[in-house]
Image (cartoon, rainbow, N blue to C red; front, side, top):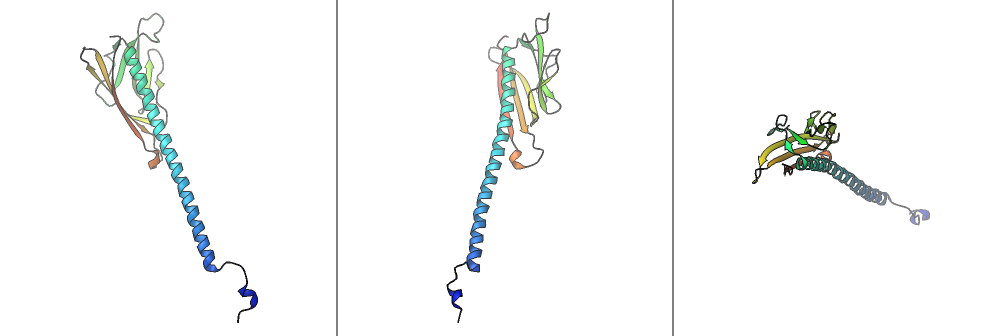
Length: 181
């Protein structure tokens, strides 16, 4: 009934081809999904690292300056507010002919933490990739009646894209006591 060449032909049937294409498509879909997951995980890790690195760097610098300061300069310090300011009297980086100088920590440009030394321009301490949503200082006294500053800060990654993998927030809270008091 069938010609002899049809019975012995070596090829794929339509069903075999469809199964092959389906299996191959699923394999490519799994591989593509894996690479998307790896990319999103990499972005999340980089965002978390950037946010934490900024918060840690600023917190360590503020603590260092508090511990080496001679006193808290009360006239310009702003305590118990989310956008507070801490002014410290110190002997580091003092102008010529002066015995002390004032350094300030505050939020500038509405979302960056700045350090300003007397007679100098403010220096940004946080990168353009993060926003500071809280920088609160509270003045308390420890058991020996030494002035202690409680620092409370919240730094968020600047998520202008709105994508969930770019969302990250770090909240740090600690205290530091003036050692030269």
